[in-house]
Each structure stands twice: as C-alpha cells, then as structure tokens.
Length: 170
Image (cartoon, rainbow, N blue to C red; front, side, top):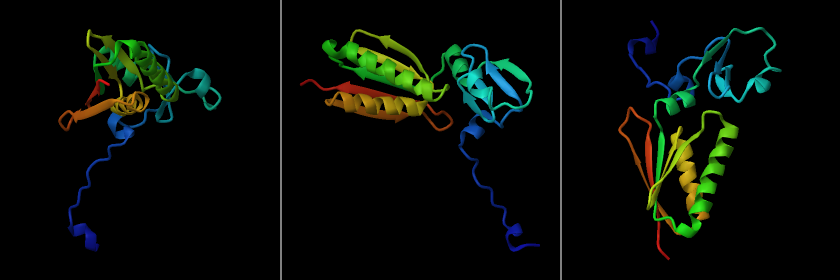
C-alpha cells in the first residue's frame, strides 16, 4: 500500500467547457439552425472550415448547438440593462452593441447577441455567454466615458451575470 492510498482526497471537478457540455462526441455534429459544426471537441463556423481537416468519413448528426438551444428556450447567461443613454447617442450605442456581437460571433459561433430590447428609458441586451456581456459592458464604458457599471451574479449553480450600465448626466 502506498502512502497516499490511505487518504481519500477528492478534488473538485474542473469548470472547463468540456465539463460544461459533457464529453467530446465522436464524429461530427451539425446545428440545424446556424449550420455550425462540432468537430474534435469544439464548435466551428461551418462545413468549409472543417472539411479540409476531416480526412476520414465521419457520421454526421443534426442537432441544435448550445447557443441555438438557448435562443429557442429563451435562456441567457448575460444581461445588460443600459439606463439613461442620451437620445442623441442611442443609435451609436446600438450600432456599437451589434458590431461587438457580430465580431464575437465571428470568433466563436457560441458567442451570440440574443436580443436588444428598446424601452423608453433603457436598453435591455441579452447574450448567450456571461463573459460576452462583461466584455460588452467594458467596451461601452471605454467608448462613452461617463458611465458606471454594477455587476451582480446569480446564485452558484447558475452562470448568469446581470450588469447595469448607468450613463451619468454631464
């Protein structure tokens, strides 16, 4: 018997993406909605990106990717509530949010901007990833200097982040 066998030590599970979505699947999985392809443990943008790398014939299954499933089920991981945006700069703010979401989607097919709701005094932005919402809040703060942010997190089993972005009056 080895010295360390008598100690029953269990380390906490890893919080990596592989743990979040389960083990890697064999073959290829293609999303029915957005045509993203799951191949070798990651989601990629399309068949053209994967085809040259796939040297064997793999079985292809058609399912919804995690981002499309979140949109369909009206779920989100990041929510930004933007309060007090000046009317004169609101269009610029919306364009900034859309372009930021577009660039994030180009890098990773699971990073998506779900919806931008315009209320009379606020904008409500939802995203599929909590890190995307945090980066977007930082980008808004950098672009519009007179902004304060307040971040709150949901209780532990959930990964949802709520960010309030408040524009200060000059």
